[in-house]
Length: 385
Image (cartoon, rainbow, N blue to C red; front, side, top):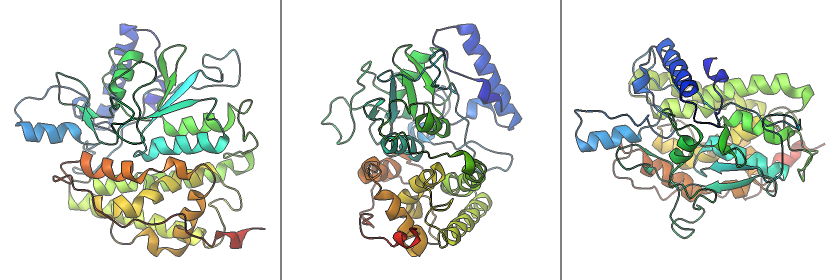
């Protein structure tokens, strides 16, 4: 894919940045999608758009990945742009070093939360620092209407969120623009930041969790935990593919569809994939057997948000996870693994979705329920050997 060649640029090389943007335009043209209508995971590119009233513009600028595919009204997700790797090799461009890297996340974002979960599971808290943005999208810059991830002004502004500890940035957008001054694509989390070179290493969660799993083992408390073991890699990759398409991204395809046809197709595939998971988990404790893998973490971050948000907000209301005996107990099982529950902040999760998408929930009211207790006993130990 074109974006695999687009990596972070520590310097402000305008020619190279322009080349990246030219590649991006080519990519969206291949999707039959105008570059100017690209929307990021937290909102569209901050281009000025004329001829809209203020309310329409505010809603328009807050929308999440609501570009058009070849079938009008369907949701497509734009790829991540920063794709460099941290390596155990001390001669690498980004070598694994304790204290050098910082992870920016939102508790609300499932993609960012899976990075934090792996960081915690591996015991890397003293090796890679992290900080959390506010839950609700806010304006990221004076002078345009773009809304996205912002930092609180103080530690007390929103429980669980912290001001930027490195540069005092007001938004994630500022960090992208610090890394690449002419950057004009999406300002998403997670962001894996290099404090030494003052740039973004990577903003693709699937790659960040792989780095955390293997490249920092010399410093990890739980170095023996391997979430991507060699003998299971082909199975993990295959599971990741259909779970991403049907479930992780499927909830967004359902929730952000703008026409009935794409919604019907997405929500049908979503519940087919959930049914498939229910069947698998009726035979073994985890997706790949008795071993916890990255596939389980990737599924978990969607399941933990499903009943509290996606059922209502994204119209995924055919069935709750609570009604799937195996999936529900599996979700509780993973939630109760030491370190994982600390990555789940339901106030941030619900506050973000229900208050950041005015075209879906104009009032911004946050539903009171269902308030599920994921710390209650589960039955997954029946698969223990």
